[in-house]
Amino acid sequence: MTVTVRFAPSPTGRIHIGNARTALFNWLFAMNNKGRFIQRFDDTDVARSTQEFSDAILYDLHWLGIFPDATEYQSRRFEIYDAMVEKLKAARLLYACYETPEELDLRRKVRRTRGLPPVYGREALTLTPEQVAEYQADGRRPHWRFLLPNFSSDPLAPERTEIHWNDLVRGEETVDLASLSDPVLLREDGTYLYTLPSVVDDIEMGVSHVIRGDDHVTNTGVQIALFQALGAEPPVFGHHNLLTTASGEGLSKRSGALSIESLRETGIEPMAVASLAVLVGTSENVVAVPDMAELARRFDPAATSKSAAKFDPDELFVLNRTLLHHMPFSEARDRLIVLGISGEQAEPFWLAVRGNLDRLADAAIWWRTLRDGPQEQPDFSDIDRDFLRQAFDLLPEDPWNGSVWKEWTGRIREATGRKGKALFMPLRLALTGQPSGPELADLLPLLGREGTLARRP
Image 1 (tube, rainbow, N blue to C red):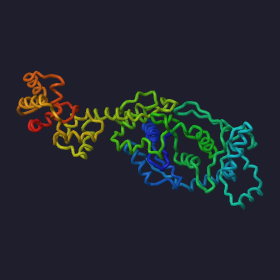
Image 2: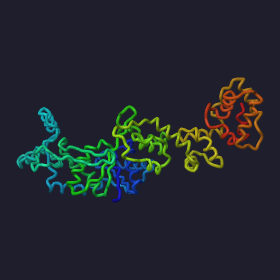
Image 3: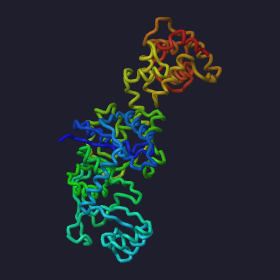
Image 4: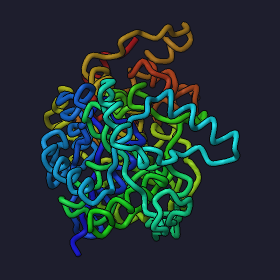
């Protein structure tokens, strides 16, 4: 069997880190099984779905390192869904209901007072032709419900089937359909809810595994019943735990919380996002994984916890620094060129500064410092100023190499008696204007003797 997975967001906003977790779980599962990844846009909500959001989601996925094998849009497949509706109607598995929201709410309240579960009582199945004609004369248009399976030949009997499946993440799962109402598949205005298009597309596209958030566990019971009603074998399901904010709140596309766009604009590396999104809430340690192939080797859906995982953005910056500190020049080269960092000094410069970067873009700050000097001159005391003048008089002659810093500081120590912070800090401030930063031993050869002398107070 060819493994085929899908990531199916509604293009009604930018995806956030929680959506990316689902996309990455599917992508890594496909990688590990040499399978296919379908990007499917569940855009049946035509009023709120936009091509702009679809394009933005694809851009975010590409930035993360996810490249779909195919891209599909549900809004272009209505004829297929319409045909399946007729099939279900012919099998008497889809029935018309005329209740208003107010009437349904009242019935739920009545059932609660009687100690019954507040599910739909299938009253529409007992409507006479005269009652239907009366509703239609009043201008009511029906919504259509899927008749969930029932052990009894009597459709009004209370007992219904339990749906069982072996979840890829959670193990053995059961949904008791007796606790659910027959789901509405088609609204009064003829538009589709999520369930039917999703199941039909999974059948039509040969989806073998559905990996998604555990907020869909109950939906899965209904969908398996619908797969069976349409004569199809259900796919393998896997439900991973959801991500929440550090304070335990859910993530939302509409709020823009931790959107991939905002993380990218903050300067976070894609593999920092991918590493945390995949590994948090699993038995794996959360570490900065350098590439998608290595992340796939670490990925095991069964290692995912059943409880929600808190996503702390501060952890992203820790992972980001780790990735930058070990990033080879070959990987950074093109992005450095965009920042105006190129030429013979670009590689030794990158190797010198990468260990002090929070974001790759910060390299431009150090490049300007090396070329143009400190943006603000430190305010030295008279004692330190005299020390620095003496220190700069002791600069070794050209040519310079990697040992020039050791040679220079040795001369200074011998001539002034200063050592430790009292020696190094004034030099660092004079050379860079910053109290911390890259090793001066690495920066001096980049500055050269002339560039170093230019920073003499």
